Amino acid sequence: RAIGPLREHDRTSRPPLLPTLQAYLAHAGRKAETARELHLNRQTLYNRLARIGELLGTDLDDPQTVLALSLALR
Image 1 (tube, one colour):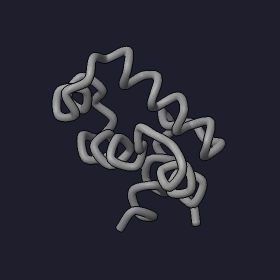
Image 2 (cartoon, rainbow, N blue to C red):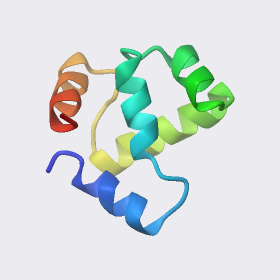
Image 3 (cartoon, one colour):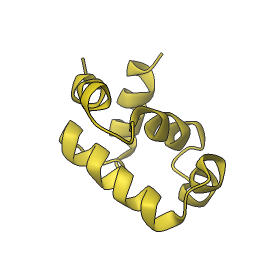
Image 4 (cartoon, helix red, strand yellow):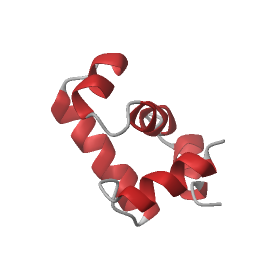
């Protein structure tokens, strides 16, 4: 439910953003490590994270948001 808009985006648009969010959360918000894992330059990662934040209407730098999203993905 919390990530419904993201799943909808991934059904209809490219690039899929759910893997980006999963990697970002797996690396505890460390952007350099996330970009490295996804083979992206950091600006591309920042753009994707901004889009994810827009779609979900949330701030990915907020610890409570990160926790809620982590739980939603389990």
